[in-house]
Amino acid sequence: MTERLKQFREIGKKVVAVCRNYKGLTAAQGIPNPKTPSLFAKPTTAYITEGQSIRIPEGCNLLYHEVELGVVINQNCSNVAVSDVDDYIGGFVLALDMTAKDFHNEAKANSRPWFLSKGFDTSCPVSDFIKKEKVPNYQDVRLWLKVDGVIKQDDSTSDMIFSVPEVISYISKYITLEEGDVVLTGTPDGQGPVTEGQIMEAGLADIVSMKFSVAK
Ligand SMILES: CC(=O)CC(=O)C(=O)O
Ligand SMILES: [Mg+2]
Image 1 (cartoon, helix red, strand yellow):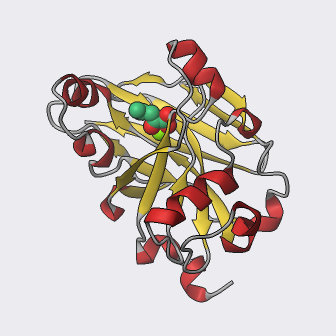
Image 2 (cartoon, protein in one colour):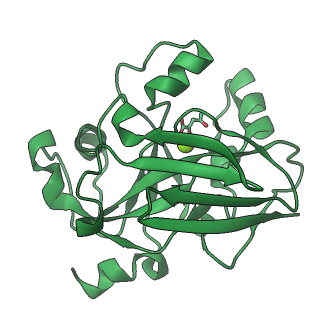
C-alpha cells in the first residue's frame, strides 16, 4: 500500500455513493429495487474524523443518519470487470452518509438536484482506514449504528442489491476512480433522525467502531 493510500483523508479524494442499495431498505420503503446502481457524489470537504462533530447545516430541521461500508480505491480504476474489482480495493472505512432529509425531500419534490442535502460540510464522518485483510468477507459483514445507545441500524452487507464488485465495476464505466477515492455502498434499513447533542456510535462487526456527536 502506498503512502498516499494510507493518507487518503489528507489527500481528500472524491466520494462516490450509491443509494437504495439494500433489499431491506427498498422493501421497507415499498419501492422496487433499482435496475442499475443509483449514484451521487460528496465533495472532499464533507469528510470528518473522530473528535470532530457533525454540524447541522443552516436551515436543516431533519438530519438523518445512514451507516455505510466505504471502499477505498487503491489505483486508477476505469472500465473494470466485476471479476477484477478486488485488485482495486485497497481497504475500507466505516462511514456515515449524513443527509439533510428536509433539503433532500424538497429538492426531489421540485425535481432539483439534491447535492446540498448530501454534500454539506461534515456530511461524511469516516473511521480510521481499515486494512483489506481485516475484512476478508466484505460481502457479508455486519454494519450497525446506535443513537444514544439505542440500536437503529443493524444488517449485513450481504443484503446489498448490487454487490461491492458490481457497484465499483458499474461506476468505473462512467467515472474513473482514483487512488484514495471512497465508494459509499448504500445504507441498510433503519436510517433516521438525529438532533443536536445526540451521540451516534457505529461499527463494522467488531472490526472497528466510531463515535460522532451532532452539534448546531
Ligand atoms: C436517498 C438516500 O438518502 C439513500 C441513500 O443515500 C442510501 O444509502 O440508500
Ligand atoms: Mg446513503
